[in-house]
Length: 298
Image (cartoon, rainbow, N blue to C red; front, side):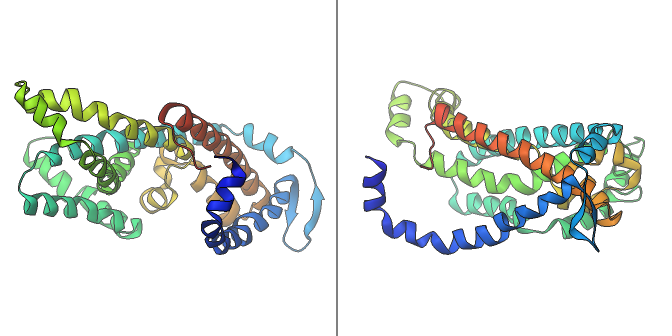
């Protein structure tokens, strides 16, 4: 069907998009004019009439060793969040799909789904108490005769605390997507496999996983667009200056420079750099979703 034909057939749906588009334009596109301060020595008194300095803010940034380290931290944390955020929900969905007691299945699904709705402001406080030197985790380690671990103040440990807690919080929501995909598999395939003598394990390997793979590929390629987003709200509520070397990400770096240190131009330059890279990655992920999973918005 041609684009004109689609518009003629779906014009009511497009009209319904107008309120959302207006909100996006007002709050997402109009503020883009403010990116001009990334190329200025911005002074709040002078406003957008501040001195124009071109690319000097970007040169300054890339000459800062801690900025390069911040980019690496962002990519490192985001990559393992994406990998764990795909593997754990898939495995858990496959296991939960084998539970035959409907009440038990729904109860487990609700329990693992609940943390997704909780704010990181609340969860960060919980994890700070749990992972402190006198918290439950270290109390358990001491009871087992192991050394205590400063989870939140040890640079090499802190990124993994962030990764694991984020996966724990969000995997229940992702699991629902895979469970929905599993319910769409034709039961006749399992019946035929059972007649042929296939065990549940063989059915999972030969039927479930291959038919689940397209949605896994789709979610994976779409996740590429969030590689530069390692979770500001989570890290900001959990980290401390002692773990900046491994826990500081681009968003927290922008917050400290632009808000706390009032270096507005530098903060805007960092934010613009992240936005450009994120736009490229989102475009790439959309292309890959179309190529490998047949997913298209238009």
